Image (cartoon, rainbow, N blue to C red; front, top):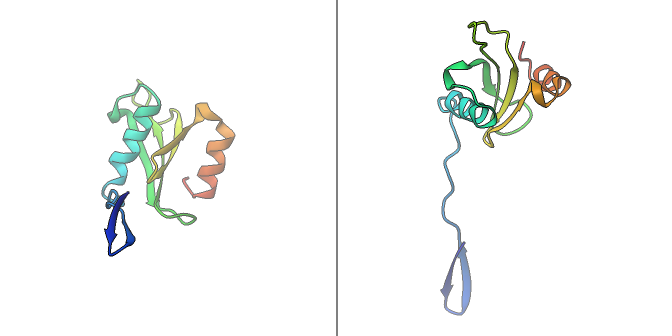
Length: 106
């Protein structure tokens, strides 16, 4: 945070932060969040639903990791944007079930 002194008083000024992501940014951000969590190619990350969140500012993304056979029945994931918070089936299937159900993913 920057401080500016004006005639004996202090005026606080903050530098602008990153711009909030738009819906156009969401697929790439979600894929990046999943790729950071597990060693998988971005092309293996299949997004099923990406939409504005009903419960918090930002977006929610639901999807699956494509298996090596190309089927979309692989591990499920849930991502919150901004924040790039990703949970996967390996973190707890019940947890992913809860997020998917609450956000109408399927």
